[in-house]
Amino acid sequence: MSQLANRKLGDRGEALVAEWLQRQGWMIVAQQWHCRWGELDLVARYPNATLGIAFVEVKTRRRAGIDQGGKLAITPQKQQKLWRSAQQFLVKQPHYSDLPCRFDVALVLQGDRPNGLLKTRHGQPILTLTEYIENAFQVG
Image 1: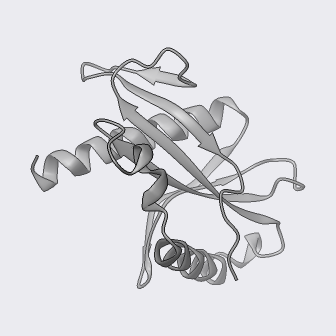
Image 2 (image 1 turned 180 degrees about the horizontal axis):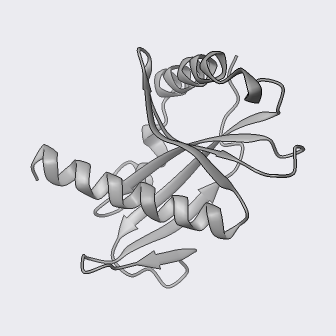
C-alpha cells in the first residue's frame, strides 16, 4: 500500500473516532495537531470539567495483524512523544492547562466487526471502531 493510501485510511479512522467522540458529548478542539515532537491525532474536551482534555491516539489498520490492531504500536517511545506533544499543545493553548488530561487510544479496523462501537462506509470500505481505551497510559 502506498503512503498516500495509508494516510487516507488513517484520516478516515480519525474522522470516525471524532464522530464517535462527538456522539459521546465531547468537542473536538484539534485534529492532526503538529509540533516538533510529533502529531496529536485528536484533542477532545468534555464540557464537564472533571473529564477535562483527552489526547486521543488513533490506530487504523486494514487487519488486526501482529500488533493487535494497533495496540502494541503504543510503545514507551510513542507514549513519550505523545506526552511531549501534549505538553507543547498546553503551552500553546494555556486556557486548557488547568484541566485534567488523559491519553486515550482508539483502535479502528477496516471491515465490518460485529461488536464495533461505530461503523462508517461513506462510499469506501467499512471502518469499525473496535475498541476505545480511556487512560490508556500514564506518563510524566
